[in-house]
Image (tube, rainbow, N blue to C red):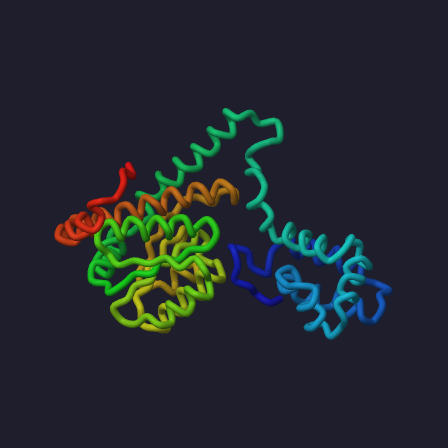
Length: 294
């Protein structure tokens, strides 16, 4: 089965495999055009789950209405429901649901305690995960950078935005380009002496990996802020700032990893300010007439 880089889920997997088995059991006695769609679904469910009706139709060699009829023929109300079921089988819909540790009758106190515990666990793990050598190297690279681009997708975008604001506050020329296509163009125009900070909790987010690959190809230094070693992003990076942490339910992991990543950014910025006081003084002058933001 085809592998896909996405938000931490690849084409293998127990639940997805079981789901494919259920589709096979329902795929007998189909019209020729419908059979082509189902054959594509069985061969590459991740493509179908991430594509439009027209894209699936083009690849299967059928008309768009045939895609809808095929979805209905195997028990779904339409193509949208089919895509939702693929997402559920992959586990990606868990991000939009409450953590599994919380039951439907959980009170607000329990919800708050669960969220606090996730953040506390993430920060506790951080001290033993991030390598001081990597942090030191990141400080040195950014300190001498011509310019820095920070990029993150989804919840990681907030960490990238914080990095931009904090680095600017100590005099580092830093930009954030939330739009993926614009970021790709800007990154491809970088070169030696430039730095890209790529933020991804999973280390597998496709858009962030594409930005990271473009940075490496352009000759820029790539700093990854991520949760685990051995992921595609951590492997690709020149410097990996790994925050660690035990695997957590998707919702809690999103909050916990952000907290740990923000602390790493804080440490990075503080170290830059300590090493180059003149840079901080220049930043003070640049922000002398700003309104009170404390």
